[in-house]
Amino acid sequence: MRVPWHWLGVCALAVAGCAAAPEYQKPALDLPAAWALEAPWREARPDDAAAKGPWWQRFGDAELDALAQRAVANSPTLAVAQARLTQARSVLAATSASVLPQIGLNERVSRLKISADRPLTNYNAPNFSTVQNELSVTMTVNYEVDLAGRVAQSVLQAQATLAQSAADLENTRLLLTADLATNYFNLRAIDNELDVLGRAIGLQQRALELVKARYELGAATGLDLAQQQALLETTRVQLELLRRQRGQFEHALATLCGTSATQFRLAPAVRERSAPAVPLGLPSDLLQRRPDIASAERAMAAANAQIGVANAAFYPSIVLGSGLGVDSRELATLFDAPSLLWSIGVSAAHTLFDGGRTSATVDFARAGYGATVANYRRVVLGAMQEVEDGISGLVALERASLQAGNALATARRVLDMTTARYEAGASAYFDVITAQQALLGSERQATQLLGQRLVTTVFLIKALGGSVPE
Image 1 (cartoon, one colour):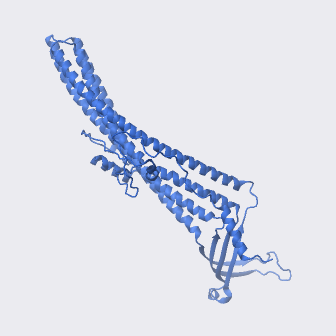
Image 2 (cartoon, one colour):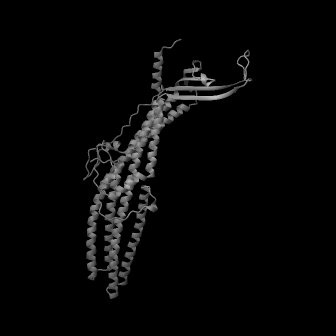
Image 3 (tube, helix red, strand yellow):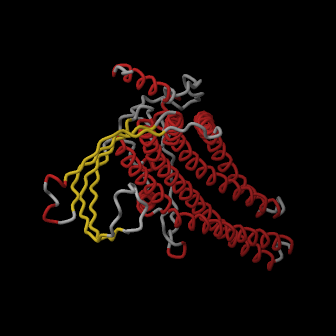
């Protein structure tokens, strides 16, 4: 019975429709219309088409800019992400080649002896042992008919994986530079705190000399002298602990810049720094700016395509093949008409029974897609939390800094008054010691709050994806 060709076409379309992956759609997310803002925050108008650029330049610190450039150029972590992106490009190129016919050229030159005792195909035609040459040149063309959509889905998966690798590279760069800026500002905060302790030690040393002179004149007691000496030694201990902590941040910066810790030094720098203003876009803008969210979304697309690849195993694999060449015993007759050979045909392979292996593979792919959907929601929710934490954290630190400034001014007045009362004999030296400790604590607290504001600003910029609209 002859089968009409149009029925074959209908069957092919039916097979392709059954094997295709589910239509990919990003899951809906319940995002708020705006951030929970407090003054002085404002919402900015997002511009996702604008270049992100080096976000760390917002801080106006030339040394930080230089360190960030070194880190981006030399970081091994960033080099790993770049290599993975290159691998993903190669995988896409290799997968896309499956869409095209595969053309090959086979050459064979041999001299062989045929056995006279080989099994007979005809008893009336005896075998003879011969020694002869064989020269063969054949061109082959093979093409897989992608009726089940396996090749198309594989290409879609490779494209999504490439986009995911590109987003992972951007996320690695963002995390690297944010980590660098965090360690840098922590180190500079310690520089400022070391400066506070250094000045405090100078004042306490002069106070010790004064108490010692008064003790020698009989105007101060041995207890006053011992108390001042104990305060000085305690401050020196705090100084050494801070130096150790500074060294750890310095070593971390060296590693981030791709340099050995033994070869990296960052000279102390004490100056007033201020955190830049960070305008905010809408919560939905995170879906466009955060590279980790983009990576999670592309992972969903790749996992969805993998379902189509797994489904294709239920259907036959059909390959069109053809060959054209020449075969002869002698080079002189290799390209003569009688030496011509050719072939054309279709091969199909289909699994009839595999014990449920293909079904299990499809179930595995569907479960993998479900995992990527859950991960996408997790990443988005985590991003929302980070932004809100950054907003509320900076508001709280701003208020705390104002209060710390008032506390510092009050502590200075208290020390001046207590010192004057002690010199007039109206109070014990213990009151002076207490006032000195309070002033030192207030100065260190103000310095620490400034460092926390800088670090929290870095955290917020990272939470916004490093691309902060004006």
